[in-house]
Figure 1: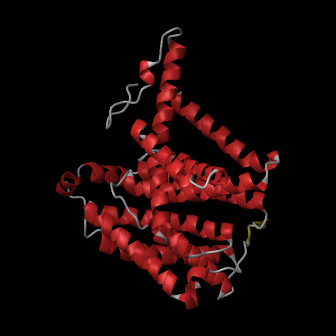
Figure 2 (figure 1 turned 90 degrees about the horizontal axis):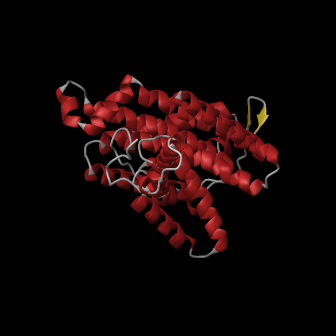
Length: 338
């Protein structure tokens, strides 16, 4: 019954999201939602590492930006405007880069892994910044446009919005299938008890390596979509700021939830844009919001929603009882009681 309610709620949410372009909203808001879908793909992909494998990676921006650069280079320098071949080459290049990075990064664990991924990301950023003949340097690459896909003209904002929403749903479905498969169960075991999993005969490093590549490939999809969204690619897409932003989306939404990073992406994209229009110190205000969420909701926005739902259900079962004490956050590291 509970699963059926969740499926119905998701179906309604998807239907409402698909109908947004028909509501007559200004293109600005459609643009914000499009960015949200794109960054949600990158954040959900990183959550496969952080939440299900126990690897905190700062190299996602390298895969995000590499895919975006390949899309731009293929269209501007090699005149490959067809979407599917360009996307295939971009994902192949991103996956190859991830395969190389994984061999290096997984030689370390914990803090060592974090530092290696951060350093690798900065190397790719520096390459894009300095290799002016290919990347355009600080000026980036412009002059490419959105192609037609399956007869759909993506140059129009509504059609591109729906295409990005469809890509988000496909990526979410793939990630759900991965984490619920035997492979995903092994990843959870590797996250919780790597030594015990190794003693049982599982190759911990191989499973981590596979998860690293899968996360990079899906992040490459987000990078390709972002290149078409902006119709511009620059070194900022590879920067450490982008890597940290994607990680913040995961933490804000709820680590290990997949859906949580979508909520985190919505907060980061929408709130940051709204605050930047109100004050020049928007980064300070946004930082305070991040800190407040992390202090009072250690399990992220999904945890807040879960506790609110539980208290509403409890109030419905026992009308007239107070739900005040139950609304408080559970102690750090423990789940709220059902």
